[in-house]
Amino acid sequence: MKKSTRVNHPPPVALAADNHPVVPPIYQSVKFEFDTLEETERYLRGERPGFFYSRTSNPTTRQLELLLAELQGREECLVTASGVGAVAQTLLALTQQGDHVLCFVETYNPTRYLVRRLLSRFGVTHTMLSVEDLAGIERALAAHPTRLVWFESPTNPVTKIADIAAITRLAKSAGALVAMDNTFAGLHQHGEYDVDVFVHSLTKYASGAGDVLGGAVIGRGELIRSLRTDFGVLGGTLDPHAAWLIARGLRTYFVRYQAQSASAQRVAEYLASHPAVARVHYPGLASHPQHALARAQMREFGCVVSFDLKGGREASSRFADALRLFAMAASLGSAESLIVTAQMMGGRDLTADQQVASGITEGTIRLSIGLEDVDDLLEDIAQALNA
Ligand SMILES: Cc1ncc(COP(=O)(O)O)c(C=O)c1O
Image (cartoon, rainbow, N blue to C red; front, side, top):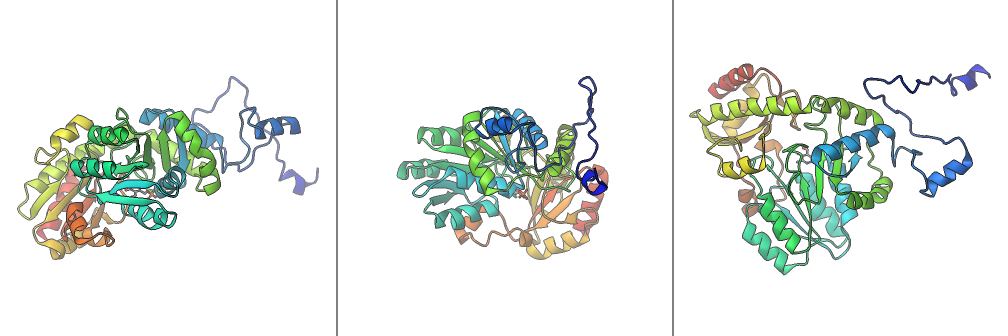
């Protein structure tokens, strides 16, 4: 074999059956082959398991899918190249012309964009309400046969708590599928509710390191398997290296989620006691209007703390500029603390009434509390509030 051939056919290294890597390896290969054409054909006819092309399936991404399904308490999962990829592919795969979707003003901006601008081009209509408006949800479901109800809890950024039992009950009795973007609550919460499809951005808590994008769609076996072909041809597949990084992040997921929630609680309590702060939004505070519902639905309340400064836009700009330990950057749930101000939040597609319902004011600030020492974070917040 010439060396130019050899570099493309390197020496095989096989592990004995009783010799295992402790950390799962990455299958960083787009292609997989079988020993014979006959087995290849059997695979292509769906008569045997295996892997062939990583856009459709890869052992590393498959291992992550199985793990995520188990964490969320469901049978099946598909992973995608980003959280928005998971949202978009789910919306496209679950709806068709003539369908109606119920969604909410508190929903993540790009999800609203997808429903309003993209699905509408394919003849899918929608109603947009506040997630707190249970009577409105009941009326909308009675007025339109509805394919899909799509919601989040806690909502971004003001941490409203959706009444999951009530929403799923209303949706199910109207024959609608329920999809919940569970990114804020994380993979270990809400699994006991009658949600058909959980969607996650793995970019956030799952990876934890802020260095990789990913998304997941999780639900019962037959429903998720029915999406697999559409997802494969839509093409927003997670790369095996990204899947491996996310699986690595998941090893510390539970300790991170708990530690970040505990620090977020301290930050929320501190902010609630500060005279410059008009209002704090954190489900773990007894003063949160839905604290009892949050306690009934959640074990931990997450790392996102939002608040309104009395000084409005001007004060929030000065506060953001004065912080030293918080990066002024999008995203949440990772090891480093972050800040987003109202100017960075979007929401320009909302009407004035919807804007009010969203709970975001000119002085709203969202913090994502990371893994730094909480006393350092509190000191930084204190000096920035003084500024
Ligand atoms: C609730 C929610 N869903 C989905 C996404 C999108 O995730 P990604 O950034 O991984 O595309 C985000 C990102 O901020 C989010 O907050």
